[in-house]
Image (cartoon, rainbow, N blue to C red; front, side, top):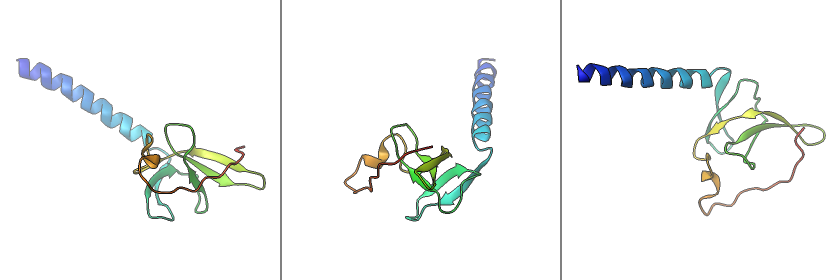
Length: 100
C-alpha cells in the first residue's frame, strides 16, 4: 500500500511537470542562430532578429528598428542560460542600445 501512495504522489508531480513544460512551449518555435546555437524563440520571431543577453536571467529576442530595438520576447538559448554565456574565455560582442 505504501508503494501505491508513493507512486500516486510521484505521478502527480510528473503530470504537473509535463503540463508546465507543454504550456511553456505554446507559441514558440525552434531556431538556429548565425553561430549555430539552438534556440527556442517566440513564434513571432523573424530571421533577422537578434538574441541578446541582458541583465536578466534569460536571453531576449530583439528586432532592430530605426531607433534602437523592439522587444519581441524571452527565449531559451542552449548553453547561454543563467550566466553560462560569460562563464568561459570566449569574447562577446557588446553593444549599448535602446529597447522600445
